[in-house]
Image (cartoon, rainbow, N blue to C red; front, top):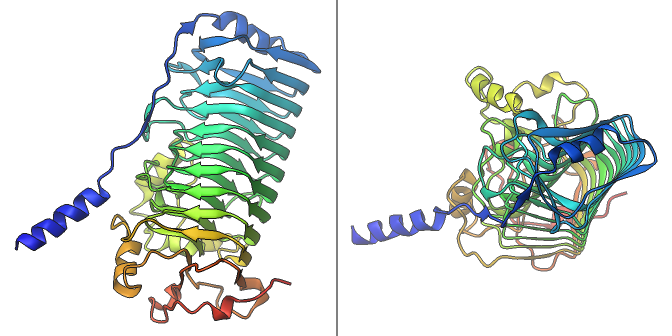
Length: 419
């Protein structure tokens, strides 16, 4: 009996976690009227020069239909735009329908919704921007720290994202994107590429998030993504309790999932270091894993809550989207370094119990759910997963389509090259 109590206590403290906090010192200066006026009067081919200091805003800063415009501060530690206590608008900075826009060298904090949202724009640069929510991380934090969507020719570099209740550095339904040399921590998802094409993600550091990197295709959107390269990234210790809005797609991401590649095609993941995750270092899965046991009627309240915050809910009706392919394919994983300092998986999700029951308690470095389109097989080019030169990576093929009956650690069917 004593042994049982000790084991239960050990599991409790293994899974118990204090949420982190970001608490920088601030000394606010009141220049709201002057700085808002700069945005209102901004002309094409000009620069909005932000002075040094910490500035409070009660309203969003918006720009629409601008070209060749630069917004420049004195450094992310020197110029801070805070929207703590915001009473008007949702975003901190919102830019729409614009071209050749550069934002650099300042910080944005504590917007009601997204800190920095850019939509329907072309040739956008975000450079040395720190985007954060202060205090202990919370579901009340805004969803996205850096949020370009429906845009082309996007560059995000040397930025920091902290405290997002969805994704810190996010790009959605966009084309020709580079995400490089950034840091993301204390977010649900550190970095996320969603329904985007021709994306390069490299030189980034993602740590202490729920999940470090998500490469997703979701249903019922206007664009579907592919051709994503992720290389030379350091993704480690992403074991934060998931604090996303219940019902949103990222609320289904288990804590301790370092990298999740879901329902997308033509992904090359190479020369990365992935380490110290309590569920799995990397997994390749179908949308069916997320939609499993999803009862549309029972989940209506959760969906409404997610949509009210501008988030994508998990769709039980995804098969009605005939243009959507819920299965991953043509994924290459090679020349990566995997390691794990944890001996036991987390038991905050079903995967931990699955690893204990059918994988000798080992946390996989690479897991593949093995779900593909009806009539498909591992030999189809459409569904290929190829793995080479990943050291002593521990692999699990789940065979989730058949209730894990054929679950195996055999990597030989996946020793291949993509055409």
